[in-house]
Amino acid sequence: MNGKGGETVTEKPRILVVDDEQRSLDLLARALRKVGEVVPASSGDAAWDAFQQAEFDLVISDQRMPGTKGAELLARVAQRDDRIGRVLLTGYADMQATIDAINLGRVHAYISKPWKPDQLALLAGSLIERTRLARQNDSLVKELSARNEELEIAMAELRRTHHRMASGVQLDAIGRTMAMVVHDLRGPLNTIGMATSQLAQSDDDPVGRAETARIASEEVQRLGQLCEELVEVSRAGSESLRYDDTPLDEVIHSVLTAMAEPCRAAGVAVEEELSCERSPRLDGGRMRRTILNLTQNAVEAMRGGGTLRVESRCEGEAALVRVMDTGPGIPDGIRETVFEPFVTHAKSGGLGLGLAIVRKIVEDHGGTVSIAEDSEGGNAFEIRLPIAP
Image (cartoon, rainbow, N blue to C red):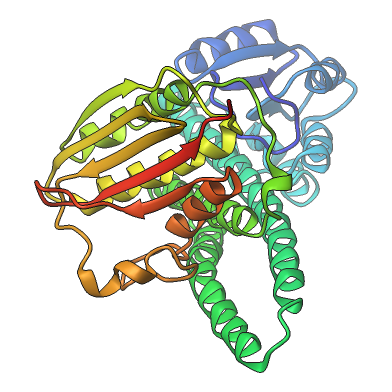
């Protein structure tokens, strides 16, 4: 189980129950065993010792106990982690203590004795769900903060690169480019902002909170993808390559393996014919990004399903890679601009950097990329990479 730092927990819930009467502890454990793992404690001091050694989702405490009272214990729990559910068990004669507990311990609920097992189990499940969604919300906020830092770094690097462009025409183009970048990044940021706000307000709708958390998580991933694209397009030429011994065919096969499930979901059949016995020198990670961008574009182009085919072979002192699909193809009027950065051609979502990144990585390797003719229709992208003697 994770520590008390706000991470989302997926293991069985843990419930700390506190009562100085053994019979009451046994009854609490029996009533709550279907809700989660029950840890008993016979006093407030023993409960606090157990609380400091493990993470709990819910604390249920009797009020009248020797030593530390229930209200005091729950107040200490709230001070340590306010997200943990807190329930006070009281007798009818303890009403003033109950009021004090609500003020001091900030309890989420109190139950008068004798309590009903079904009522207690239902309340415990609701409070545990609230605790876990609060932790998940904290985790999403932390991840969003980290992504924002990555975005700031990428934007700073992009600004430095564009600052080196001297002419007024180039500066004007930069302004339009930055406007496009901000426009595409504002979407997921707004969605995440609204989602986290809803998570904080919708205490009585666990299903809605879970769906909102899922949407926010997906938008964080989307924001991370946009940041990665900005970082990739701002890298400085061939000197940024880190060569390794990964063969070209192995790079291609690993990408197609990763794309197997997205292709299946999109109704796209995958064919591969890899026969490049002599591999060029590669930065394996960046070449994977190249093949992944081309295959993802191909799948997006075949909205009604189709076939993705990837081939590799050696031709003289060059390695040839072809990525083909059976989609509608690229119109002749826009073929000359598809490899330009920030060109989307009305594509929804993204910064229009996918093919620009492909061309940059290929050219950093000393190769070329082009749109080849495909007799069966669709797109056919062709990469040629030099094979060092």
